[in-house]
Image: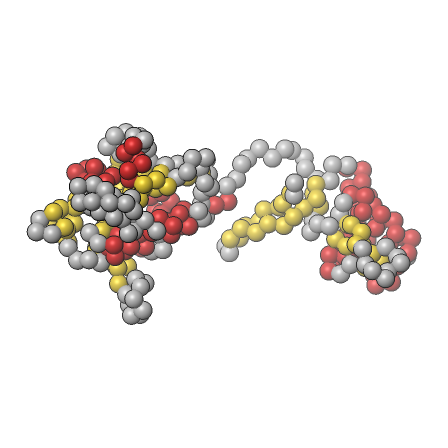
Amino acid sequence: MKTYILKTDENGYFVNDTKIIENLGLLKTVANDDAIKIAKALSKKPTTADEIARNLKMPKKTAYFYVNKLLELGILARQNVPGKKADVYRSATNSFSYEIGDANVKLDIREQNIQDENVAKFYRRFVKNGKFDGYICVGSPDPHGEYRAIARDTHYAIYLAMFLGQFCELPKDFPVLLDTDVIARNLFKQNLIVVGGPVTNLITRDINNFLPMKFAKEEGWALKDREGMHSRDYEGVVEKIKNPFDKSKEVIMLGGIRNIGTLSAMLAATRFSKLTFRSYNDEAPWHVLVRGYDIDGDGEIDSVETVQ
């Protein structure tokens, strides 16, 4: 098992491999300028002990002594070079360390990657001990429900999973389910991220009455809130509620009345999350209407507008 030193600055997290030295006596032997010069030189270019002595202008006896000590500690290693009669040495690690106490803090780097506070608040109940806690629910690709609809937005969950993968690991159970599976397995009392409107996703249908922005079927489907009806194809909604079947859990719904509306909501909750959640303050229920636009005219949504 390799051991690493973790460093962080304004540019992010960085790791450097290290060799843990358990023999304090040997560590004292190589904790000097000559040994460090040799280790640094071999980290740049493998070479022989004679060449080290010549390049560093030190006695051969000194060079051989420290090479052997560094080799014994595993800081250096021999390298096989065809045609070379003398032993060639190389660096086996970028640093060496001595531990004065056991590591007792489990750090999940990805969980720390949620650098925007409001984005972290929105998703934090879906991350438990560094793992995704809940299920992503997508519509079945088979005809189902009263409209015998076929979901064509299931693949949007891949993008969502890539986004969530930045800051949490996979759970033990498979986290993506069809709406029909949630119903069959009675998994309503879980943290759920539901993708798609009520026609293609039956879970959206079942929680629709609890949503702050509801899907309404008038002359045609539309999103309805206090401001009125929103029926443009490119409009979607990102909303969050306490799970009506278990108030200790939450439901996030990303959907629109058309596929493009659901895609707009998905992008708002992921790629444009800082914009979308800029005013979010850990509320539930909470929602925001989003509109997706193709600004550069290439046929794909590349910009999102939020309507608070």
